[in-house]
Image (cartoon, rainbow, N blue to C red):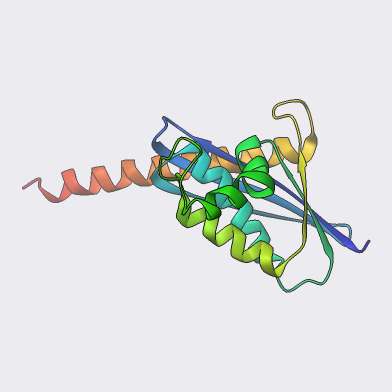
Length: 161
């Protein structure tokens, strides 16, 4: 197989709130999984970060990359909207600053180095790899929530005499 298939998803508990991202990468009949999170973020940032982290992990490969996402924000943004945003000095059609410009610029830089074929998949529709990416993203959220609990407990514990 001369192709890599990547499935990505992002999740957030509250928007903003603790968030997570997940990616499933299929290459040479093998599957790799990536996930992570941030303590205070948005769902769209996590969708973008899942895409960026997954693409960074295959940047050195010469294979064709097919990226499957349930985020129209990511797919439409990178395949259509960014061209106008760049022309308009990172302003939207309504002349507002583009949200997540830092991540869009990272994604553009990656796509300048790597050809990516973009595919939208319906979320929560039983697609196994997309469901797995969703599971990984939710694990990222839980990891951030647990981290916050541990940090809060440590603060309270350190002030007890």
